[in-house]
Image: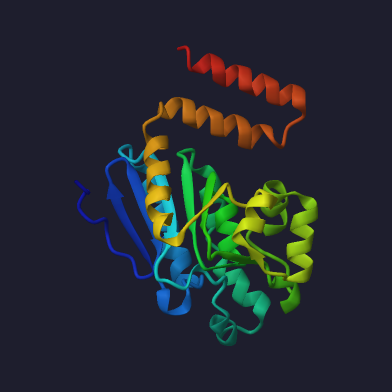
Length: 244
């Protein structure tokens, strides 16, 4: 049985289904474009799942049939002195750092349009599952901008430098199966199976020892930026901590 609804947000839905928290980007009328309100709502929702001891895994998805996220809401650019200022306001809360601080496993369910900050959010999740209709794009360079939510770093780490450069410099669309070949997504499923597959995966992860999951994420994410000898020492310390 699902838990009672979580507090309501304007642009994000948060529900708990047993040990799995479903975080849903919910602006389907604009393909879940990321705006200031979504920044605030997503920040609060992610804090809630990070701090909730009953949540053992997180599933991130987008509402509506058209896509996971169409990137930044460009209509906000007209209300700021410049696009740069508009983007600065949108990133004033460090949602991206909050993603990285969550040591619970996170599964992204990706469909339709996955653009700009949609790609960046997906790259901050641990497991990425795409429907066959998903299309990925990074349009910032074509708008005389660069990604401002970590895309130049996370995309390269996930898909490799060559594929990241191609996406960042050409704005070429990348279909789901191609994204799987790049390593941008882990598997591709029919659209009708996407949410069930993502939830099943999150539920499986929620059934694992949370201490081991946390230690594994810490070893991988923190160790990736260390020299090998330091990363191996980190792994040894974390392995030893599980024996206590």
